[in-house]
Structure formats: C-alpha cells, structure tokens
Image (cartoon, helix red, strand yellow):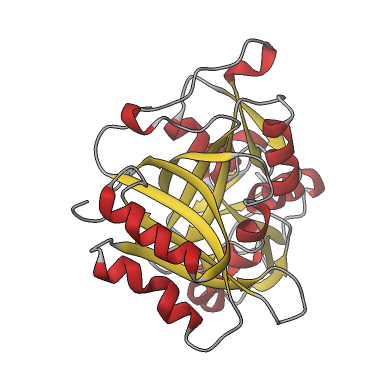
Length: 290
C-alpha cells in the first residue's frame, strides 16, 4: 500500500485487527487489502482499536459506512479519541449468502439470524421465503452460532468466507436485495502517513464542533467553497446524549500542505470550537480531481 508506515518490531508487526468473528466482511476486507498479513479478530470496535493502539496489531480495519445502510454506528465517536490515524481506505463489495447447517435445506428453514444491517439488506428475499428474522451481534457470529446449534430450521446471512470457516452449506449466493451493496473501510495505524509518500488523489478526514451561534455551520464551511476544496462527505452526530453540542465528520479532497486546503481549514478553525484531524491518506477510489 502506498504511504504505509514502517512496521514496528515485534510479533504484532504483521497483524491487522478487525471487529467480529473469522469470516466477517471485515476479515474479507483485511485479506483483500493486506493478503500477507495475519488477522486478529476482536469482540468489539473498541477492542480492535485498542489492540492497535497497544501494539497487539500493527493496523486496524474498521468499517465506516455502507452504501445501503449508511453510517456504521459509533465509529465517528470512537475514532477521534482512539489515538490512531487513518492511513488508507478500502471498498468491499458485500455479497450476502443464505447459509445453513449441512443437514438443512430451504424446505427446513423457518428462521434466519444475522446482524440487523444484513437482515435489512436482504428483507425482500427474506419476505419472499417467509423466514422469521432474528438479530445477532454480527454476520460471521451468526454463522458460527448456526454451525454450533445444528438446527435445520435456523439459517444465517453471512459471507461465503464465513460458510467456509464454519463448515456451513450455501443455499443461495448474492442474497442481498441490491447488487451495489458496498462497505467503505478505513485502515488505522499508530503512525500517520507522510503526505509526500502518497501517490495519486489524497483524502483528509476530520471532525469538528461548531460554535453555538447563528449560521455557525454556514460560516465554518464557507472557506471550502471559496477556496474550491471538494468536500465529499459531511455528517452530523452527537457525542453525548445532551443534544447541545453537534459534532461533524467530514472528508475532503487534498491535504493541508495545499494552499487552498490550508486557507479553508484556517477558516474552519476560526468558526469552530475544535477540529481534530483523523488522517490524510491516498484514495482507493478517486472521487474527482484534486
């Protein structure tokens, strides 16, 4: 990967952490982006980030948004305080499979379990089959559960890799309702990427909190328009349950070493309480002309 930081010495130098069980889509993203690295499954996003921060893994692969389901919950809150930097991105096409125990079939299935987003992405096909839907913590975990219980009435929605890992039968491939279902992942490291090491289009991700005054957001973002900086993503979220301080996550093309981006970020900082840079990295899929 271009601009990838030098690995620290130690047993963890070739490991990449992800949230979920073996066979998860995050596992598939790790294999696609870093085929020579060992994977480190973690129970939660916090655990995957902590493993990287504490040196148990060199990198972390974290999903940030899905083309069908939207933003991945909690990620925008976790990233700014993780102590890690975004050093890359990866787009993984999500191809759900309907899985079951080796002794089951479509005729025996009455229920299916998976992550709520996966269930939502397959709702038309589930309705057509008349299957009861049972939410589970994650897709690969649901596959592992189905393999363990061995119930011919229970199926799972997960990846082809999960079927292979957990010894399940694939009843249907491409079980998702939409064929363009894609998840965007970010790759995190203790060490940021040096801008001069990045080849091709560059992306900068950051969060900011606006001042509680009229037209604060309009003023904060004005510099990006006047300086011709392309903002490819802007999302609002609450960091706490007070509903008093709105945080924003943004992606822009370019980096602060560019004069127009520097001016835009300067204006942003003037009209906000705080700005936290999450990382500058190469774009896997160019959004436009920088």
